[in-house]
Structures are given as structure tokens and as C-alpha cells.
Picture 1 (cartoon, rainbow, N blue to C red):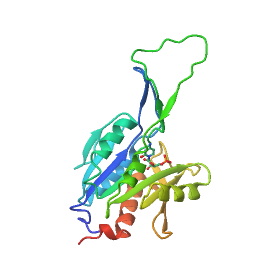
Picture 2 (picture 1 turned 90 degrees about the vertical axis):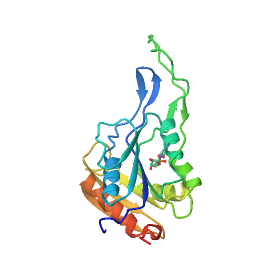
Picture 3 (picture 1 turned 120 degrees about the horizontal axis):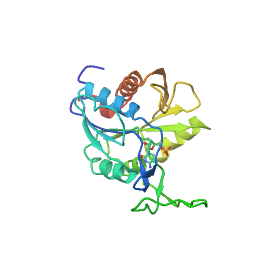
Picture 4 (picture 1 turned 90 degrees about the horizontal axis):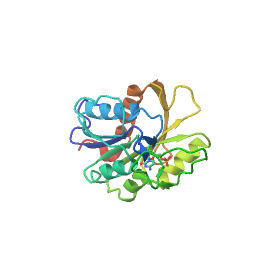
Length: 224
Ligand code: C5P
């Protein structure tokens, strides 16, 4: 892509895990490091985009030129994304959002006893699904899928169900892919049965390939 391929384009990226409190000192979370989302934000900014990165708790440094918004819970990420969706031209939802949260988090540290503990969990909002429902013309939504079975079919149906333009599948069973690794391998599914594989590589390289492919193959993102 030309160096300023995304100048004038507003890009919104989510990254990292969410943390769902059980009590003040305990939580439900997952092993996402945020690396893939941060790499996407960095790649988009390098092409001149105005990038906002909504991040769950991570240890990563903010990429140059990127505006970062830190959140903790799925509910906070939902709020941060929905309040910014109107201006976004291109959205990458790379966050590993918790699907469930404790229904009644305790205000004080819960004491243990000898019996089992039952937690009641409730669904979190599906942030990306909400974006899909409100998608405006010309807005481009890219989601991620991490599947352990029927990966391709699940990813493709997720693309349709959430009203996405593109979905990037990383197959958890493949070595060098997914959570906590420095590398990733993706299959990208798009409109009109478009399918494109990105081979195992460092996440920054994969991010570059992903941004490049989506921009090249999306009419709404061509320079006017
Ligand atoms: O349905 P599933 O969790 O597999 O969908 C994954 C995609 O949806 C990812 O892009 C993820 O960031 C997004 N997602 C979301 N809000 C949720 C769950 C997932 O935005 N509550």
C-alpha cells in the first residue's frame, strides 16, 4: 500500500482480555496478551490512519501515534466502543472479551469455607454484534474468531450473523497461532466467498498483511 493509504481514515481497534470481578481481589479473565490488536493499531497508524485503541489490561506499550483508552470489564469496553462507533470507518475487534461475568460481584473479599462455591454468571454484551446491528454504509467491520472445532464453518457463519465484512480465523489447534504466542496464522473470510490465508509469522507481520488485504479488497477504503 502507499505510505498514506489510510490518511483521513478513522480506525477503531480493541485488544487484550477483559477482567470480570468476583470480589475486590478475584476475577475471571483469559490469557490474551493484546499483541495482535496492538500490532493492528500500529500497522494502521503507520499507514496514516487516525487510530483509537480500546484496550483491556495488558503490559504493552502504546504504539506511536495511537490514542489509547484503557478499560477493564466487558461492560466498560462495550461503553468505550459504542460511544466511538459513529466516527469509525474501519473497526478491528481483536479483544478476547469475556462472554460471562459474575452476576453479583461482592464488595468485600469473600471468605472461604469447606464446601463448594457456586458462581452465577450472566452474559456480557456482544460488542461486535452491536456494531454490526448499527453498521452505517461504508463502515467496515473486521472480527476475529478462535475456534477449536468446525473452525471454517463457524467463522463464516459468525461473519454473517454479526454483519461483518471480514472475519479472521485463527485456528487454536495450529502450532504458532493464537493466545500468548508471538506469532499467528490466520484465514481471512470476506464478501463473495473471498478467502485468503496469511501464513505463520510474527504478529506485527500478520497485522500488516491483514490491514493490507482488507484495504485493497474493500471498495469503501479506496482513496477518493
Ligand atoms: O462470538 P465470538 O466470541 O466467537 O466472536 C469473536 C469476535 O467477537 C471477536 O472479534 C471479539 O472481539 C468479538 N466479541 C465482542 N464482544 C463479545 C464477544 C466477542 O465484541 N462479548
